[in-house]
Image (cartoon, rainbow, N blue to C red; front, top):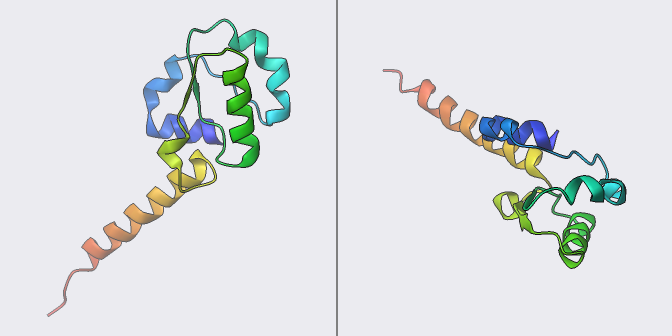
Amino acid sequence: MDYLSLLTMSPDEEKKAALILNSINNIKKSRFFLSKYKLICSYLDNDDGGKRTFEQLKRDGFSIQDRSPIFQKYKDLNEYLSAAFKHSEKAENKKTKGIKL
């Protein structure tokens, strides 16, 4: 779901290679794939597991950028995008109500 949220926010990301883990437990299986890239942009969850995995990849020598500050107040990118849509819907509803005389 987070990858679909990323594509909703930034459609050009679809042109780039992506690795969807589904679980941080799959990180060991992905090391060969990741080693082929000069830079990894990480959208791991803002929980202990996501932070540990990010730090482990850094220690293992991968050039990795943490993109979680984008959604720092939320668990993950999908939760951030959902909240942004709800906020914009509320703002739109206020605009359309208007004043009746």
